Amino acid sequence: LALARDKEAAVQLRRLGAVMRANDCLRDLQLHDYQKEGVAFVLALMSFGERGSIIADEMGLGKTLQALVVVACLAATRSRVRVLVVCPGFLRLNWKMEAEKWGVLSATPQTMRKGTDRPDLSDDAVFVIASYEWLRTVMRVGERGGGECLRGFNLVVFDEAHYLKSMSGSVAKCSKRNRAATKLLEKLTPPVEHAVFLTGTPTPNYTKEMYAL
Image (cartoon, rainbow, N blue to C red):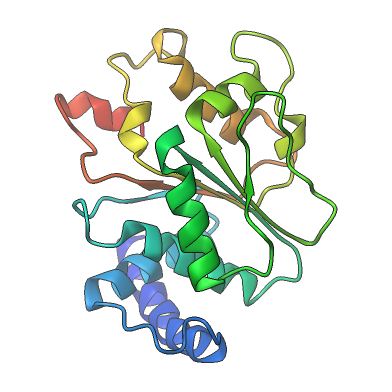
């Protein structure tokens, strides 16, 4: 599997150059080699039908940009793209600014501010930015149902994904953030196609915290 993944990543790396040249906003962007490899790694896993991937570069090395380039590659092959970014509340504005700056998706970023906010899914291109607290409210942790407004999303990006760390392998004992994320990825029909976890500290305290991701 690792050999096949690496072979596919090499294919995706070549495709990445074509996508960036075809995108007016990304044409002059100079990614570092490790950033290109990170994007190609995610795209390779997506092409294999894997449900998740982790980009664990250290703080300040451009994980947000890598995720946005993944979105650009997704948009280059599909007419209908729905993307959800889940991040700490104080980072929502930064994500909105970065998404608008690079213009990887034609959609205007929608920022969910209140628990009662719901995304507008009327367009083919949808880019939603929300906090972990909003996700917890929408997914109705501990209740039946929930998450109807998030059905059919192609990609979910969890920024600062160590917010999902858990000290237990038991879902019942996980944090509400973790349970909301798990419910989003495992209980909706149709399911989210792929989740990208961005974190510079995947194991802040104990190695078993990696299990949560």
